[in-house]
Image (tube, rainbow over all chains, first blue to last red; front, side, top):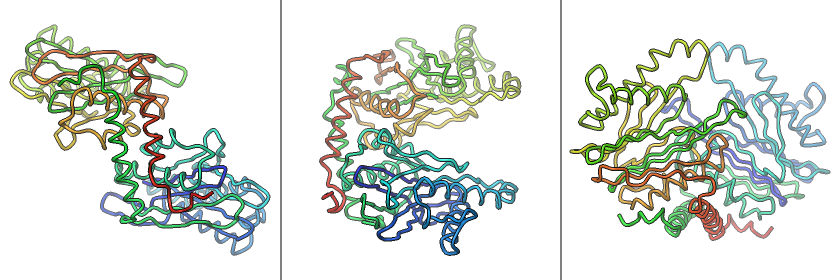
Length: 248
Length: 248
């Protein structure tokens, strides 16, 4: 499986993705699931991927080839579209293309053929925008009501996001929140694994502001994980016990 | 869906189950998913159920009829078996019976036909024991390494259990922990709903020690939920922010 989060704030967007892929429990590998295109001063576009690796890699390669070769059928690429909405349509169309061209063969071998994406970034003339693109190529956009999207193994890390995520958060706080959501997921599910790729994009900068691979032994992440465990346990201990049944 | 937890401690067992069943989003009802048999001074046996309601109700009815009519094919009932292991086999056999007798018709209507159970309690001569019974009728038993079982929509409420559950907990603390696990699940998933049925069994008492339905407006649960939210937010705020990127 996979775990990816995109969190859209007033100040920008935080992206994070794990790197574990597995075909069975004894065939585990590290693959980057975060792909960033940066044209400084004009646009930054990031994609996080979940699902069948052959499909998601093909989609990213297709988008890359469009940029290098100039265009898709309609003459657009991630470099030339004028809005993030158009970028989302481009990704959806690329997904449909891959599914059409490889779908029959993949269907024949009964491979799990689903894929989903988080797409976010900023194109000059717009605010930063964040989308979740489904397996069918259609998509939804994040709003202030629901500022984050998750794909992959999303349930373990959702409660902390549900409680804490707010559009007005500072970027450092938001990155901390996203990493805690990963920490909960990593502890409870083997199919999500370190390292974590983290990228921070700040509103109006039109460049990647912070991009880092957080390894197993990352001092900040280890400290955060420990401090959170301790804080949770002491928060738990501070709550009133059930009934008066605490005598035994 | 459903959410049920059984947590086995040195001092006894805490059981909890939600009560929401749904056939589509517009057909929601309240059904008890906790069934307790009590023969004071001799044994207390509780079952929590998840999955197809027709199947789980039929299994419970079958176990009840065996008790009233005297025996299953081998002459055993929940009242007469001498160990909780035998009780687990009885439940597994009842599940297989129901699946055999109603499976064909249910299969024809494409109903989701799966069911799973948490079974726990104490029979005189044994320590309290806790089992998870799968759809196939086979089962596993909780140990000190993994003192809890969850069935149904289990992922949201697992991180807090993973971090805090310990065999040496006091019963009141354990009940608090189980209710917090429900709180996380209720907040993130609509298919799990109040009220919650809670039952506490203390080692060596051979009677139900505390059995309560926790309603939507339960003062303790509401207070716990609020206090936990506040404690989580302040624990979050107390952790070091990511990098020095907190300036914007």
